[in-house]
Amino acid sequence: MKTFSCGKSDDGLEFNLGGMLTLENAVAIRGVLSEELKRAGEIVLSLDPASEADVSFFQILCAAHRTALRENRQLVIKNILQAPLASCIDAAGFRREKGCSHDRDGSCLWTGGKSDQDDNVR
Image 1: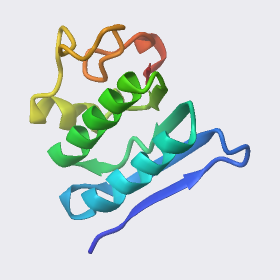
Image 2 (image 1 turned 90 degrees about the horizontal axis):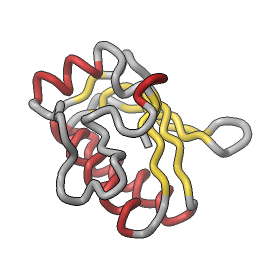
Image 3 (image 1 turned 180 degrees about the vertical axis):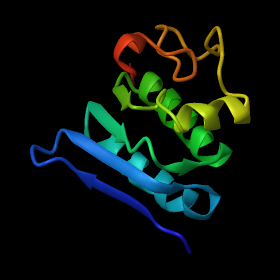
């Protein structure tokens, strides 16, 4: 199995994820994100822009975003709109003009969210 990497910043406030963000690692990635969302009111996820990702990873991010919204938590994602991840998002058909029905606060990951100027999405 190809691996993915995850870890926390020294201050414990930022969670780093990279490597093979694909179906073969989906269960592990989902587990890590679920645990972090249970633990903290805000999770900051910094993605390695050189990561390889597929549609399963984007589906996991959507589910994590919906969970955060439902539980009044914050999910901040850094670097999601940078190449090559941005081209993966486009190829998978995830880029949107308007968020889904769960996106009550304009924070959809695929529209650029509230802070698209700096490629961080809330």
